Length: 295
Image (cartoon, rainbow, N blue to C red):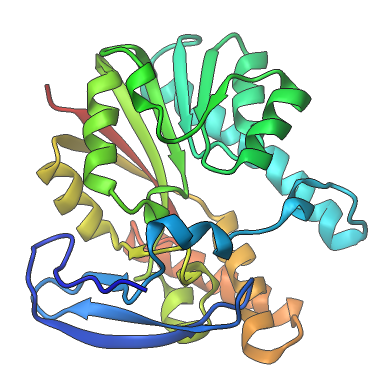
C-alpha cells in the first residue's frame, strides 16, 4: 500500500480521516478515505500501488452477459438508453455529427460501438486485457493499452470521453496533459464522475457504493472538478445530470448496508437524491462535465 501525503487539489498536507469504507466487490478489505483540511477534497489513502491495483478489479466473468431476471432486464434497458444519451451529448457538445473520438478506459466497447455505428471514427484505451480482447472480437474495435498514449498524434481527436474513469486514474495530471495534447483546438473533453456531495452520498455514508474503494482513489465534488480542471488547462463549459446513477448507486448501497437489496427504499432514496439535485442544481449522484482545452 502507498500513502497519499498531499491533496490533489491544493497540495495541502493537512489531512484528516473522513471515512472507513469496505471493498464490498472484491477483497472485502477496509480502506480509509482522507479529507483535506484546507479545501475539503477527499481521496483514498493508503491505496494499492498502481502496479498491484489490477487485483482489485473484476474477473473475466464480468465480460459475460448471461444473467437473467427482471432487474437485469431493466438494467440492460437503462444501459441502452444511457449509451444513446452519451452519443447525444457527444454530438451536442462537439457540434458534429461525425468526427474522431477516443474513449478512455472503454471497457468492453459498447459506447465506442454505438459511436462507430453512427459514423464516428473511434479508438479506445483500456488497461484490462480481457476487456480489450472482448471489444476487438465482439465489435472490431481498435483498443490500445493505457501505456500507449504516444501512439496518438497531437491535435487528432474532436472528442475525448471518460465515463466514470478519472476517479480511478493514478497519474491524473499526466493523463490530462495527454488529453489536452491530442484534442484539436476546438475539441471537447466529456467526463462523468460520481459526486460525493450528492444527497445519496450523504445518506449512505460509508456504504455509498460510488466510493468504491480502492478502485476509486479520487472523490470529487462539482466545485473540486471546476478548480482542478481549470488548474490543468481546461475550461468548464457545462454540467449535465446523470439521473439513473442515483438509483443504481442506491440499489448497491442498500445491498452493502443491509446485505439484501430493498428495492423500494433504494428507489425512494434515488428519487429523493435527484429531486434534491434538481432543486439545488449540479448535485446529482453522477454528473457529466463538458470541458474545453485552453490552448
